[in-house]
Each structure stands twice: as structure tokens, then as C-alpha cells.
Image (tube, rainbow, N blue to C red; front, side, top):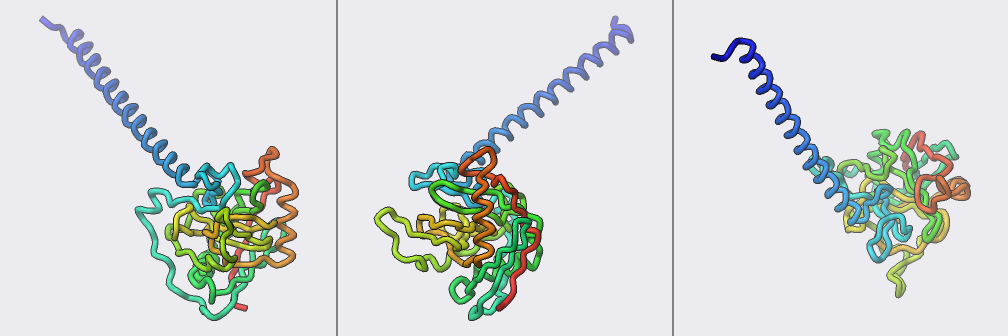
Length: 264
């Protein structure tokens, strides 16, 4: 005959066993989730979206951004893809020129933009600036070898963020015909869109060219920095990257305190 004390002990053992089973199930699911996340990250990296890549710079062999050979914008994350927002409706004068002013802690950068050549790009920046999308964001990446750019436009400051929509490539023939190496020169002062390396994947990230850089003609050149802005970016570049890295966060942190777009 089973006593009440023995019954209590049996129930306690059964309860403990159920708790262990639940814990094991949670551990199993967590492990599967981590595997999926790791696999997804590997796909992003393979697509040229390394940690710093919402302008990811990939070389002709498809190596990641650390090689410092080519700018791109990180591919949208799964959450961005699932809840993709529509591209903003046209609200700029496609025959006018606009100035985007980036007020930064390292000096103001004025960027002249021609809506006749890049209407949808200018319209997107007009929309995002009006929403204060860039305000308080950091320029997360500086490249000082191979190509010479400062990458900005990701409010997360990690190089993986975007507005949830994509805009098409524009004005890709503006810098001339590619040479035998498949590249053109993006002159110092040029401001261009980052992308994943695939057509039509521009978002909010862009790069500021502070020294002539050879890149494939795959990145929408949509603006030109003024002299003061170019000098400010050169000063940041002169300080180099964190820990002396040729491709990574700038040693001089750059924060876009406020971004505005106005018709000239």
C-alpha cells in the first residue's frame, strides 16, 4: 500500500521530470533559433552585407567589406522585408536642385543634389530628413585603404539598418564608361548610395568620397559635397580608424546631429 508520504514524493518526482523536459525543449528550440540566425547572418555576409555594410564594401571576388574595395547597402533584415514600407511618393520638383545639409559634430556638410538626374533618390532623402530619420545617427564606417569613403545613413550606427523600403539605382552612367577593370573613378566630393551589390537595393545609407576612389559604376552618385564639408570629412579620415583599422569605425566619432533638405 502506498502511503500519502510516498505518493507526495512520487508526484514531486513526476513534477521535476516534467520541468526538466520543458527546460530541455526550451534549450532545443533556442539552439535551433540560434542556428537559423547564424545561417541568416552568413547569407547577409555572403551578399556583401558585412557588419559595416549598409554600405558594404566588397571586392570583385565577393569578399566581405573588410577588403575595402567596393561600397554597398546592407540587405534588409527579415523584419524589414516582412513589413516593407512603400517608397515615399514623389514630393520634390524633378527639375530643381536641392541642398542636403548635415550638421555634424565635426562640421557642417552641404551636399548639392540634382533632382533632374536622381529624382527618386533626392525624394527619398527629402522624405527621410523631414522625418528626422538621420538626426542623432553616427557615420559608422571609415575606409582608408583601396577606397576612401565615410559611410553614414544608418540610424542604428551598426551598418545594418535601413528605412524599410528600397529605391532604384539612378544616374549610373554619370561617371563615364568603366575601364578594363570594370570600375570608374568616383571623384573626391562625390556622395553616392550604398547597396547590397544587387540592383535596386538602395535604402538610407550613403557614402562620402573624400579622395578619388575606383569602384564599379553600381552606386548611384546623387550629390556633391561643398569645400567645407569635404575638408571636414578629410579631417576625420586623417585621424584614421579605431585601433588603426583601415576599414571600420572612425577614430573621430561623427554624429549627424541634424539633417535637412531644402530646394535651392
